[in-house]
View: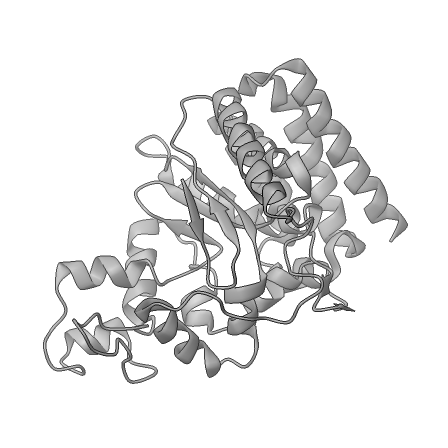
Length: 321
């Protein structure tokens, strides 16, 4: 499915696939189809996760995006940048087997800074070098942490997510034929307590959850949102690495141990990327584990070799930075 984001970004959403190989084939075909459409219109896909040339400019206006733009204004320019000038590779994985959801949830958070740094691809925005390895992630981290910051990771992900959602500000209240805006800094818990008049419905809660954007977001499955968009067809490289790290429960536990030194260092990873020694060391360890596990993902040997080559080049470039 193709959809358009507020700044004109085109998003490809694939159907779920039972294997990484079938996902890679289907999504690559989608990228090829989109590339052909854009070529006929005299356009081409960008190579980075931020618009390297233009300042943010909103093209799409809907009640949701109007309310979003107004709510994000309080956070300075970063909300507008996020809405109109950024693109990501979002990876959806299952939540894990019963009894192992919490370790999987924790591992996806712990590995975040290392993978963010390894695949950072947005050092320029609106014609200028920003000084950040991932300007896209800088935008997210500079917004309201109650909406875009990471969910605290404890031994009960459902409880932690519920608390996060209740404390998060309500972005908008859907109304027929009227503005969706609501008073700023009104949490969902405040709404339940009567701050907005009519109490929320279950449908309002479901909608509220779609307006929360932590780096790892639960949706019945788990959505990983911290990876920069990659150049060309290299989108599948971070997807393959992440899948390899989740290939079995032993690997998930190994990821948590390897990433403990860099766990929670989101800002450092976004700013310095692989120039940060501790994060770079963690990324190398993670890449080594993923490389050993790649053949178990079912990807063809040639694609495994391509993934290892791209990761190796990124690590080598990080040593030189």
